[in-house]
Image (cartoon, rainbow, N blue to C red):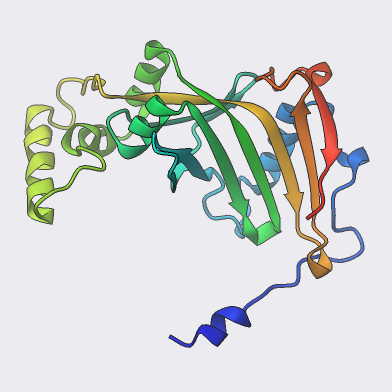
Length: 229
């Protein structure tokens, strides 16, 4: 590989004189600001999967890890995603219940960044979401021992076939596995980032006034700071 192709690869952000983000542009509380931005990208061709979010965690030894998951809920409490509790991220969140999120909306030169504490969502909430998933996804939650080693693709497919035979499509309801459910990231910071020319990007951050998680719809619980790019 010619590493010069990496070194020379760059995009100069900025979409004209109206590009950017000013303090006066922001909603009073971070939930309203996120909802406004998400509404703009939800069906934008430039952002094919707007709820794809990079989830960063830390294991018990302090080693960071990151992967892409799907954001499945945002409300005054925080940001919700679902996964196998026995997965690598599940083990890491059990050891260090804190995480960071990045929604990388590169196609519109925006990002949303979140940092906060993590907790399990109520079991009934996980069950309601699990029931709404496609049948194949529910079967996959039973078949995959997420993050564990597997001998071959065939072994994984055999486990899926066994689960599918146990709960055939259109038959009995696929139950929620005990090892599967939701996590809620309760932010202490929510950053809204807009690309600008010459790398002078705009970074406006809602910061909890107490340093602890605060309701995302409570304007009085947050202050806005501008951070240098």
